Picture 1 (cartoon, rainbow, N blue to C red):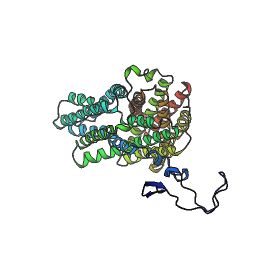
Picture 2: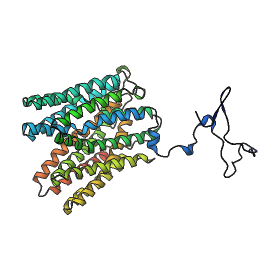
Picture 3: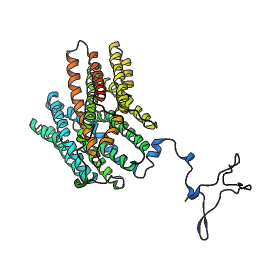
Picture 4: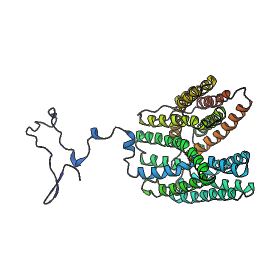
Length: 438
């Protein structure tokens, strides 16, 4: 009950918390200095008492905390499965080549299946599609675990890991909920997208670390097992929050494919080049540092991106894609300069600062994807963007690995992510990727 309500014999009634001996002479007379203001009707809080933190206001939305918790649990395994599979397969079969081929097959299968899964989510609803799709992906992970445990033929590993391609895009489903809840509030949607991008970076940092800890501390299959349990649990918690779920869009009322939206294909090309930045940076950093410090040093890029994403979400203004891509292209030269000096501290600082450009870039790109995607196809549009990123990561990893092996020094490998960032900027200019209108 509001503080300005008092119980009377006939029920609650308004009762002032003070009595003004000098009432105002007119409706526009200001309150005397130092004097309390009258309570707002209905006990509504005054604007001055509302939190200035946009993230506090964001999670004051009914149901936001519940579906965010479930999505966090479901999204953490996204950074665990690849590392867990490599450790598990390489330890049992003694072949990193086999482990890499199996994970690459899973990545390719995901690139093909994920847009179809997202289309079904848009058409029939998140709960009706995400739960069975996650159950199938979980069975694929458990099948892979059993095949490795009993050293089944190699082809069974490819088949089992390909079955995990039905894993729904949990980050896209969460962004779709924010877009539905704040469809009339661009500022709140900007903050929500910034939070989601920061969560992506956080999972990128914590997922591999948790997977490596479980596989090394318990047993080689522990990372895959824990990831499967977390994924299924998180999706069940997330989809149980039906009040915040965006409405399904039946096929009869749906729009055309997001690929046909003007500007979408060039934008996906930018995402492809941006993904190459991440893939190349990871491989080159691991090769250049080559030791137990490689993981923590590489994590600094994600840490810088996470921090920048949260700060960017607090701002009331947003930059255009070309501005963000230009900043990323310039800052990606810092890791190369740090590596050339031979100082690990300089390289770590360069990665930290360079990472600060990635979250705003991806946030701006995802916002533009939401604006270009036809109504009722939001999950599909964002999944296409994620698929382009995954393809870029694969291409960047291959390019970075080849450069490290053939260049005079591993430091020159850092020119690959720099060139990929410059390519993304060039694509945005040449292909006329416009700034999203507010």
